[in-house]
Length: 121
Image (cartoon, rainbow, N blue to C red; front, side, top):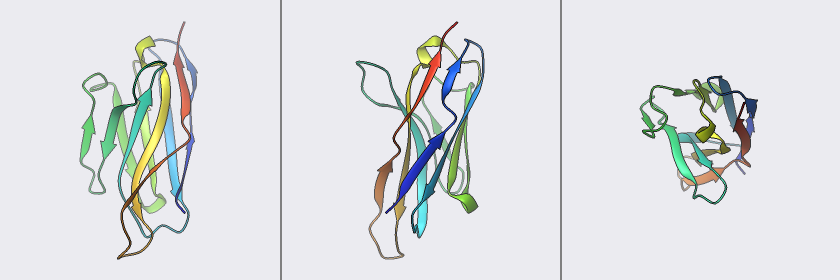
């Protein structure tokens, strides 16, 4: 079974930076698209950024130019470098990944438990 383990969340002042990481493990054959989503209280879970295996990226307009998503395919790990953080970035950030357990297995989607990011002075 695929497990996504996140780290790097915490409290940071406006304008500060934070780096999140998420490692996928559990007998994975291949990991495809990975990404980060966030959910603020009372709001739906929204896309932050995604990255394909070849490195193609997609960002929400609200984070373009401030956040950078990257990955290490050898480690099945995805990162989110967050800079120039704003109070409105405060949310629980969730790691997401598409993965299969074998060459002919189905591609399934997995979620991490989430990590709290709070931007406040």
